[in-house]
Length: 272
Image (tube, rainbow, N blue to C red; front, side, top):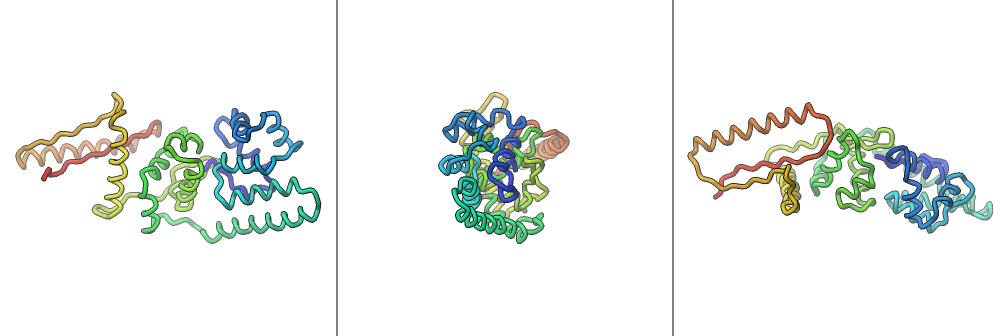
């Protein structure tokens, strides 16, 4: 994801620099956004990046929020800031030991995870299909121009912290991969078997999403509902017609580039 692994950096300053550089357009405009989030002037932020000043712990905590760090990452970042600000060798020595232990813990977790599985477990499926937003994140990651995490959070109505947790889960399960500081759609498949509990949840998720948008449906979008009666033979004709439409749509999507994201929900069922 476009979120670096803090435990791989020697100090907090190098991490912040990398965080800025890995944002869209090489980080242009990010200094202003971060400075605003920290409640400081851009000049002071530049001095911090250049090593002339240090973040206060209060500013460091706000940066953790801006970056969407989880609890363990934030603890490490705050210790790294405290280390740079420490006033004597005794404190620096203690903080150094804590930082080393924390980094070792991160590395050990990665080691235990090992190679990711291409097949989702039952628990993994229960998480992934708990919300349409997991699938939406993967679709956004399939675009030619992948939004950064801040943009994704805004598009999906999520906090940066929650989005980070969801992305980390999908990275671990190979539903997403990281390329040059960006998230991309991963190799793991999310297709579910017909009539499984996850198929029902999958359909429910996207139809619930559709219901929230009915009042703001745009002219280029389609929303069509009609109850009807017909002969059994004509029903089969309609059913076959819709199947062919689905197959043709799938072929078009398979050969298309990721420019926009869309959702197709189709239902044809007995009324009673």
